[in-house]
Structure formats: C-alpha cells, structure tokens
Image (tube, rainbow, N blue to C red):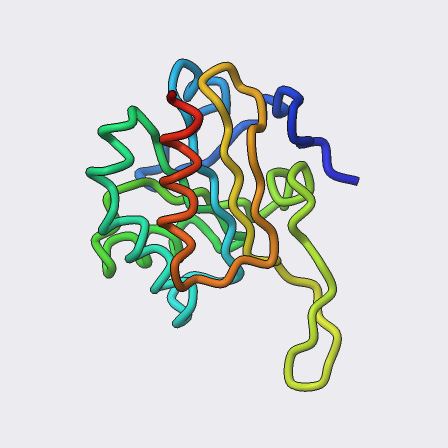
Amino acid sequence: MADAVVGKKVPDLALHLTGDRKVKLTDFAGKPLVLYFYPKASTPGCTQEGLDFSAAIAKFRRQSCAILGASRDSLKAQENFKTKQAFAFDLVSDSDEALCNAFGVIKMKNMYGKQVRGIERSTFLIGADGVLRQEWRGVKVKGHVEQVLDAVKALNK
C-alpha cells in the first residue's frame, strides 16, 4: 500500500541525489515538484523520458517547478546516466526502495515471458504545500512531459 495519496501530504522521505547530496522531500517545499520514476538508468525509454524532461527544463523553471528522476539504480549508475545524458536536474538513487514503496511504483511485470519485480513508469506532481496533486501511472513516454507541464501550469493558476 502506497503512503503517497492524491490530496494528502507526501511522506518526508530522505533522498540520495546525484552529486552525493542527501536531502528530504520537504527540502523542495515552497514550489511544485515533479517526481518521476523510471525502471532502469541508461535504457532507451528511460533515456528518452529524461531527455524530454531535460529539454523542457526552462518551461518547468518558469513555473518555479523542480524535477527529480528516481529509480532503484545505484548512485554510481545514476551519476553516469545524468552525466552521459547531460540532464539538467538531479536523479535519486532509491536502492533501498523506500521512495518506490512510498509511492507504490513497484509492480510485477512481464519481461521476456517471466514475471519480474520492477518499477512501473510513473510520475507524481507534488504541490508547493507538500500535497500530492496528481499522479500518472503506466506512463507512455511520448507526449508525457507536455501533460505534466500542463498540470504544473494549472496548479500554479
């Protein structure tokens, strides 16, 4: 059962960000935060999603909105992914799955005919007040960033 529920404050979890920075979710209070989860660093869909968010970073910043990408990858894998793709935002290494579990993004998935535990591509919009405002689950990468940006704009109105 996920702790993060639309309309309620999100849990104040510790995050391990690229740049070996340790922060809490509440450190982003005062402005909207887009938190997106992806299955695995340096894979095609995850790379495209990160590139799409990165390409739109100026539009999100005009809305005073921060972006974080998260997966279960190690900090080293996240650092390499961010550097190689020149992402304009930090990535979260959630190797202990605390963040994934709080947002309920770990699912059983079919991979090559086998059931495996993995991250369901999902995005969450957290308001400046720390309340979860919107969620997208089972995300398809194409066009997704525009949907999220529209939601951020609507939230700021």
